[in-house]
Amino acid sequence: MTHVQWNDSSALHTFAIEIVSKLQRAGFTAYFAGGCVRDALLGNQPHDYDVATNATLADVTQIFGARHTLAIGAAFGVACVHGKVHGERHQVEVATFRSDGKYTDGRHPDSVTFSSPEEDAKRRDFTINGMFFDPLDNSLKDYVGGEQDLAIGTIRAIGAPEQRIDEDKLRMLRAVRFSARFGFEIEPNTAHAISHHAEQIRMVSGERIAVELRKLLESARPGWGLKRLNELRLLRELMPDVAAAWANYAIRERTIAWIERLRDRGSFASRLAAMLSSCEIENDTRRKREVLRLKEAWKLSNNDASSIEFALMHAQHLLNAHTLPWSLIQPMLIAEDSWAGVELARAFAEEQGAILDGVKHCEIALGWPRERLDPPRLLTGMDLKSLGFQPGPKFAEILREARAKQLDGEFQTSEEAIAWAMSQSR
Picture 1: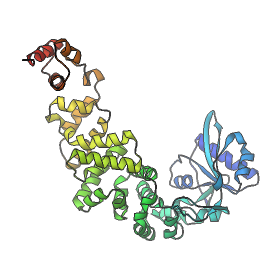
Picture 2 (picture 1 turned 135 degrees about the vertical axis):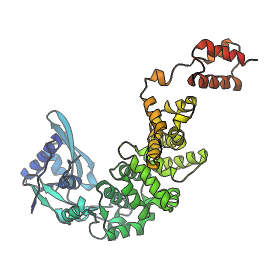
Picture 3 (picture 1 turned 90 degrees about the vertical axis):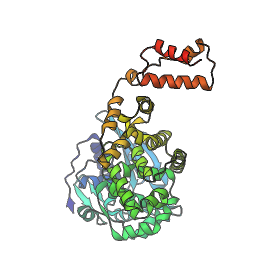
Picture 4 (picture 1 turned 45 degrees about the vertical axis):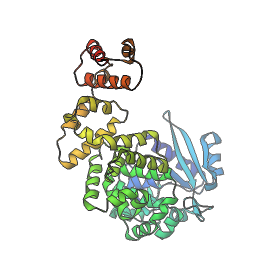
């Protein structure tokens, strides 16, 4: 029996211990389970807590009361227990130990059988996620070798890797994501099974794929994860154009270097845009089409899709912003997605060893007050109408040109702008 020093003084930890304590006092077995145990063994504070027990959903509801218990997976014996600690509301997922039946949809078991801690551990995905911990006697319950795999830095499927993947195809992406998060190698048999079943990742819903990829790209080691995504043939199923481009070693390494540059400040959108930029799609229409495809396939939000598209289309201009007219750069910087383009431009510049003057120019401008970055127009549509201009193509062109001249400093006052407009009527 391994004893663990659990370093977490949070109210959530206190609440989770209370749940285990109440279950054990009622005569049931109850342990912390899964990710919180893994994180604590790695010296990290868990973000959430799961409790596994031999108490049934009915038992849990009786112990904590119907007002504090929400069945979130009644068929699987899963409930959410919520309550307050020091005035703060917290919740912990409580699940009955179980064994799973067949997975005919490649994602969820058709049926479950309530069982023992040992059997419950064996139905989980990876050894590092299959451990239990008793917080009342500070003892680790490891039936699958998770502690050893944590020590050697290995992602290993519990039992037969082919079976684990056959049950739940998303586990392939989860293996890569955990590898990226912790910098762990994927055990050879597990890696072989992923590569062998890679095309089956298409069975997983787009939303779930996007969640895993977001976590991977926002992890501490996105480049590490992307290399494994490519090596294990998952990338070619998810982003075939990127995978084709990455067959070229130089392009792959350059793109990964861009993404690593975005590690500390980059968003999911700018990192995904960096991947798409490796395809070297020069045509804006094709760029938009590829972003739209991913948006529909992965059910990306409008904001994500807009930011990705903006970064792809404008990063190179923003990289050279200090050499371009302000009237060309300013409309990009006042766009809602400007930050994504600037993030990607900085990554390009840093990886290429290029000067950062253009990027710094943009970053400084983004810190200006709004009235300086986007000053009121010196010439408006109302002004043109008062001068006798009728709405139409020429009307719109005069407004655009007047705005450009204003931004580039050719006009200082409305009078100057109006005088110029009057000259355009000739």
